[in-house]
Image 1 (tube, rainbow, N blue to C red):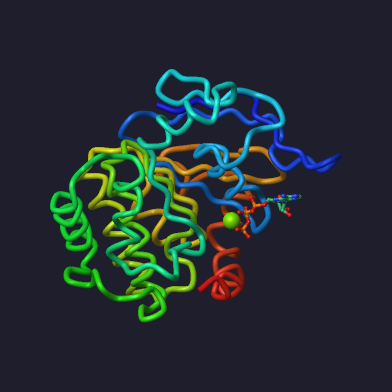
Image 2 (image 1 turned 90 degrees about the vertical axis):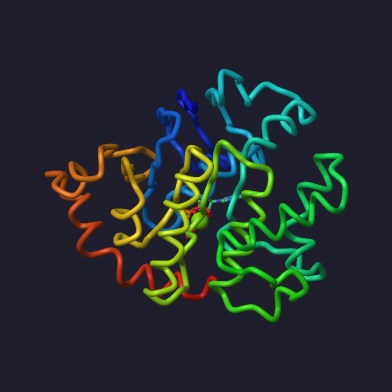
Length: 252
Ligand SMILES: Nc1ncnc2c1ncn2[C@@H]1O[C@H](COP(=O)(O)OP(=O)(O)OP(=O)(O)O)[C@@H](O)[C@H]1O
Ligand SMILES: [Mg+2]
């Protein structure tokens, strides 16, 4: 479904992604790990077309998205849903309007149908009946769930999650992990999840990739990843989770 070929992102002379290669299969859930500033969000932004690479190719469903026009990208983007690192809800819109946003922009569905989809998606994320709430009336975990409901409104075949559980308590994080798996089953989609939360990574991932100094230093199935002999992988699994989690708490 997705293929990255020699993708480079550089700001002036600072290379963030250094000729990376990656293939993500249809229906797979890939977790991307990496230290703060390693380029994880950048990678997701490339996939959803918020940013173009400095060089290299990105193929999504057979289309090279690095060369298409913004108009053509809009068509590809409708197959993608993204849960942003900071939820990124529209603060001046109600929960229902946030979830309906893409449906109004990209479809000519009538209000009744849109309202039906909105309430169904809110129900899927455990927020049935919350349509009229404003984002500032919600907790961090609820905002993430609204963000997920919005991301799945258009039945995406690819869902991108940028630190969906950052800043959440372990129980709420667990709920989000279960939702990620639930979406996978309901929509039969491909998912890419950026996280610092190892428990969540192990729960949702088919494969795990570790980004370090601009390169993937390990990409392997979850069980293999856990037992990798790469010292950086073990260091990440055992050592990195706690301090990074504390930093990530500022996100909410
Ligand atoms: N517009 C920009 N101009 C210059 N540098 C940038 C720009 N956007 C991102 N960067 C740099 O690219 C690097 C990767 O940023 P990115 O947000 O992808 O990291 P990340 O892995 O998502 O980190 P975190 O875990 O903290 O969210 C950082 O060092 C950042 O400073
Ligand atoms: Mg990030």
